Amino acid sequence: MAVLGMSFRVAPGLGWFKTGLGEVVYTALLCFVVLSVATVKKPSADMFGLAIGSVITVAGFAGASLGVVLNPAVGIGIDFANMVKGGHFGNSLLYTLLEGVGAAAAVGLFKTVRPSEFETGKTTKLMP
Image 1 (cartoon, helix red, strand yellow):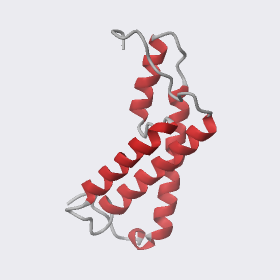
Image 2 (cartoon, rainbow, N blue to C red; image 1 turned 90 degrees about the vertical axis):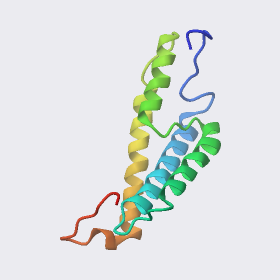
Image 3 (cartoon, rainbow, N blue to C red; image 1 turned 120 degrees about the vertical axis):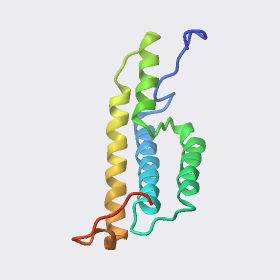
Image 4 (cartoon, rainbow, N blue to C red; image 1 turned 180 degrees about the horizontal axis):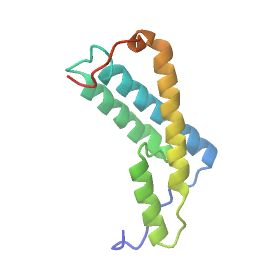
């Protein structure tokens, strides 16, 4: 970015409501898919990578127009680059909060749709 002499804002030209809603929705979708295919009692050994990768691809294409980043590390990197170029630092903190809301929504939905995964006395392996 120093070579080009520019950086971009975390929320390019959009209001926080649209960007925040997109961040929550796409983060919830990604977390729900990860929970559904990789952390269940019988995870799909063949298709979990395709399912997770497909959600990331959709979020990359559709969510990019909303300014969705899906990852606190990406948000902090963009925010830091913006600060170095004269902007302010802090948007990534709001993004991280929104991603936490999306993850909590995904967990709530997962517990509602798959209650058998949470029977007492049983542990779940993350991956085979």
